[in-house]
Length: 237
Image 1 (cartoon, one colour):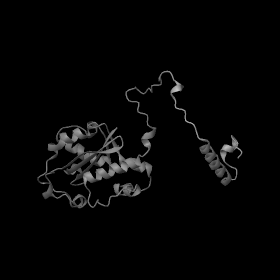
Image 2 (cartoon, one colour):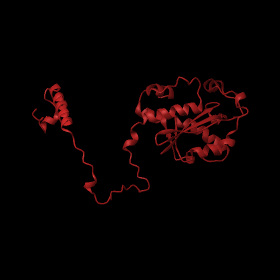
Image 3 (cartoon, helix red, strand yellow):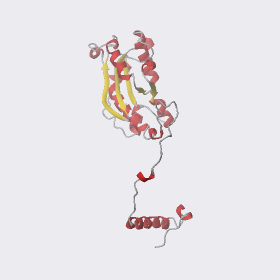
Image 4 (cartoon, one colour):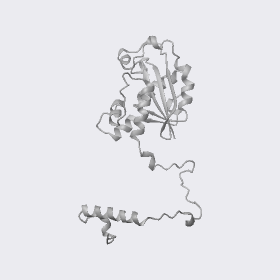
């Protein structure tokens, strides 16, 4: 399964006030492994950032003045996310900005450009109700170093979120049955079973003796309360 972890930086908080995206960062996860593929670009927004936003990301108007505009990178960006499930922390914020940029180009809704959108903030709130679930807080909770994160950056934040997502969902996929194109039906006709092909593994007498001694020790420590004694008494030594 392919995931794309996405983050943006913007000139302000509200696209309805003319604020724009100035950076997009995407990291690819395939089969629960972060790959070497990523998408990253700075964008010229043709406007200044609000002072509060500038304090967060540090991307000045002068720095962004020679960068490409969204329309110059949109096809490359959409190609990268197209066949992925996109993970975004506080997804509604980024999607409002992405939809505003796509609307200017009459390119449709962002959710229609990828397989699905997963909000990692909502997932974190379900796992850790009542706790802080910012990216920094989750990094601390899962032991992921973010010491190099002085300012927010879309690519760096995507890389951190990818590690956080894998930590939050560790073990989750082990119970998932991928039905593929079976229409919801799991195939059960595996043909005739031939037990002769099964390997026969024998246990050495010394191993059996060591195992019995280990069980006897457990039984002694529990003062005879071990459950297996109800079904099979320990063999006499």
